[in-house]
Length: 149
Image 1 (cartoon, rainbow, N blue to C red):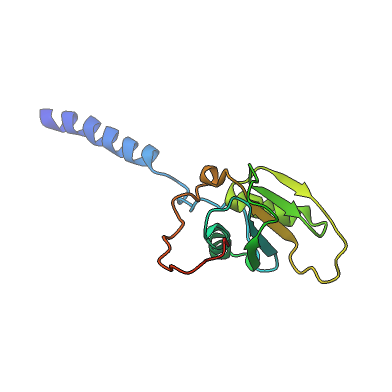
Image 2: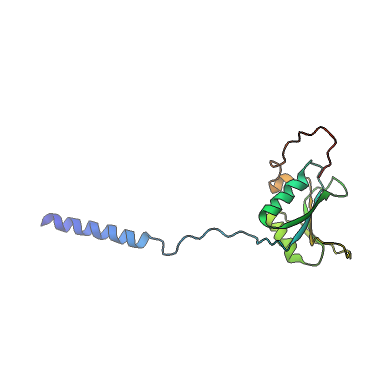
């Protein structure tokens, strides 16, 4: 009977620990910081001159759920920083694209163009490494002249 009084407190402590250490709410998957939409049409321009950068960023945006319509070169290759541009007066769409890429520079530049499809333009600048894109450019094996897309 002497051992019974030693076991009861031990069982009580174990039961209390099990009861109070359990998580009452099931764990939820972390939510994405942004919510992409195929309705957001994006143009990606290479403004850094690194071969394949527009394609790399375009693929990342497609994987994130955006509708990438255009991959092209910017007007020049000396943009120091990447930038996201709202082209149609829909700043919430530009914010979603910027969050998906981790780009903090955003502006609104609306130029009337009845043929413009893309609501957001991304220009990739020389800081592409800061947004984690420097390791993702595939090596080129083609020896012919290749565009800087």
